[in-house]
Length: 186
Length: 333
View 1 (cartoon, rainbow over the protein chains, first blue to last red):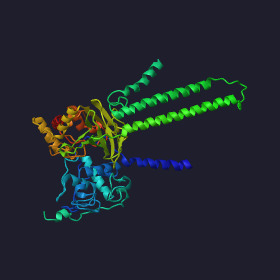
View 2 (view 1 turned 180 degrees about the vertical axis):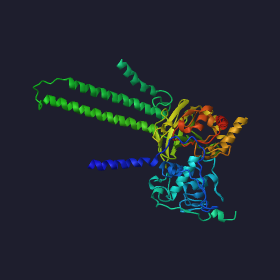
View 3 (view 1 turned 60 degrees about the horizontal axis):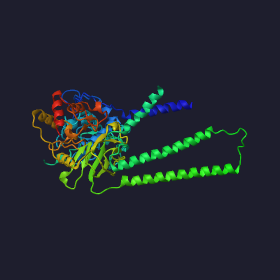
View 4 (view 1 turned 90 degrees about the vertical axis):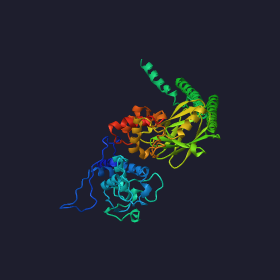
């Protein structure tokens, strides 16, 4: 009887191994994934706007390895130069629930790739595609829009608040306020 | 036959005692102190082992009469036993105290810091070494990676830091290990007494490519060192042949510039090895591949085939961009 109890318990521990499943060799086909997103729910004619999501997002935002790599690149590529630790500075905050250009991971990927008006540069051709996905997954973890087990448990250096893993689950409200940089006459 | 084979197998590890990465081939004062200590320990403990084994064998071989009384209290035997045990205990104490004293003396050599040293800041990263030559004159400060040059016979102070996890700096020919710990700075002094190229290796498991985290220490005469330093301080020389000019265009328009720096160009990334004089270094990928045009091209095209898990990404390159890029980088002497 006891063995019967222990066996499923042991099986549960195995489930944890998928937390940081990773491929040691990144995809040799380095072309960018095809994401089509719409920034407004309106479209001409009947039906919503045409969107196409590659489904890669789930793979990235449920994986602790990808998110922690994103955390590293966030600093390496100077995202914190404008967005600080997620609280926002000259760029909008990333840890709140407001998303000017949509808060789904595909939207964030496109925002990094294409850039956005009033300051966000385009990183197409400068950051390889898989790293853009990793950064986007980390950004999703800031407001805890990723599963708790996958979110980073600690930072390498001093952190102004609780680690992503300890934050309450967030929500995504599309369409935010105009960022401070856009309000100023330029 | 079997015995000959096992002797051959046993002698194989001895082959590791020579060459450019061996603690027993000491080339500096602190490595010398360590090597001396190693041989003293081997000799003393070897003698102790032989004596113990001899005593054990003698005791095993000695026959006792079948009718001997186990509780014999013969005063002669008692006295002999007391003397033997006392002498053995005294010898053990002397040995332990002597070895402790020797270790202490060796540590004084290891941790004594001489003045007037050249100062280097070495930062361990997954999986390479960032090296900054410090100097009071700001125009002589420069950053390089994975290859240290030092003048022969001069003490060099190594300040050790880490950017991510714990690494350990180890040049077996010159000194013992010292850990590089995130959030603090450790210091270590090295000195090479003879010119040569010594290999260093990360000695603390630091992740997937720990084994491919090597470094070279090149000890050379003072004039050669000065020449090398004055060259490293300078910016990269702009290419003057069309192929390398094309390579530079490719380099500056690709993701390379997000992480790498080439002084004298717009590439200013500081999170990956400085490539200003990459062609002058003997190895790329932290001691992984020799610096040749072919290896540079192979590394750019497929870093994860060579060093799986490395942070160098696979980037999108057209076939006709690879050759100019590799030749540009190779030419950064």
